Length: 161
Image 1 (spheres, rainbow, N blue to C red):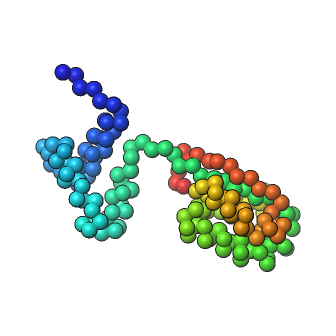
Image 2 (tube, rainbow, N blue to C red; image 1 turned 90 degrees about the vertical axis):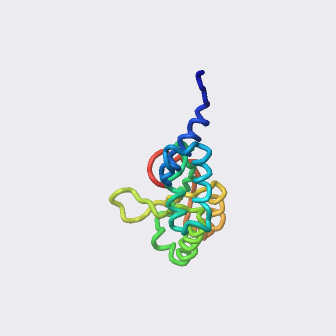
Image 3 (cartoon, rainbow, N blue to C red; image 1 turned 180 degrees about the horizontal axis):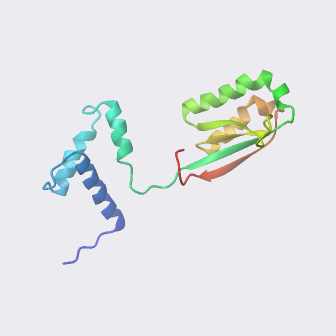
């Protein structure tokens, strides 16, 4: 008898076997028994937090969609260094707050190589709404330091994000 299974069924079985192997479930154990052996191991009461985090990272799906990020670019006025002072704390504080909330990944000024004055900035956000919210609340925008901005969708294919 020929047994056919879908690609997703195969992936599920491979994932279960990989988890069972990681947990040292004997190879002679049947697949349902391996799943039963695996289930209590991820219980919040049985594993310390650091182990659960490590385990979660190590058992990510074999294939997953790349994350989508949103790039916010700013254009600055030419004399940004002279005029940003009164608004800098609010601008940087807003970015730090959004990083702490997990909606902003990183950000900072950008310049033409070799020039010391930034001509703009680049920020990476987890959602389009977060990027739009940053623009709406940023004192650099409301006080004329930013002359233009754009938001682009970016699909991360390689690297950390």
